[in-house]
Length: 209
Image 1 (spheres, rainbow, N blue to C red):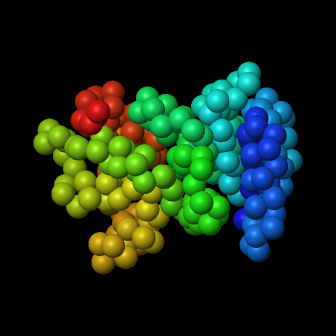
Image 2 (cartoon, helix red, strand yellow):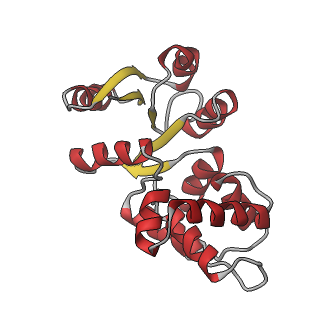
Image 3 (cartoon, rainbow, N blue to C red):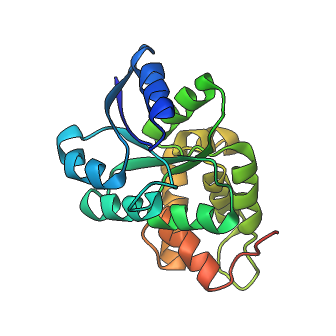
């Protein structure tokens, strides 16, 4: 069973999400909180597989909540679920450590699919968010990334898991992992989030407005 924690201040939406998850075979809502402060006190007890995190929360913002969670539990899987699709917020959430970014209002089956994808190592994103992120990763020629590494980085930005990338490019998952290690080494980063920060700060990417 995929265990899920919800952090959402809208009472009706929080209850509806919890009902959807609990009523679907293979999923379970272990907890639901109206704010980050309460969630942070309980995550150690809940230890969900995936956290659905809103951004516009009372008190501590969802992005700050992501940062705090990742500091204490670096491996925790967090998906942003929000109405906000502003470029800056998307990248700030990804840089904070979010593993996916979804826009509210998506079909229930798509949300469940995204939760499972995140649990299996993917980085689910709503379609237009993925297009925006991919568009920003136009790596310029001064980087030492090979064409294959650029391809893999692009697939990562689309939210594909190692297994999906391997299938798309007709290579093994071990080869994908090897390329990703090389990408991180060349960019001097340790994670996808750090790669985003590096690319933006050093103008290795072109933001398409």
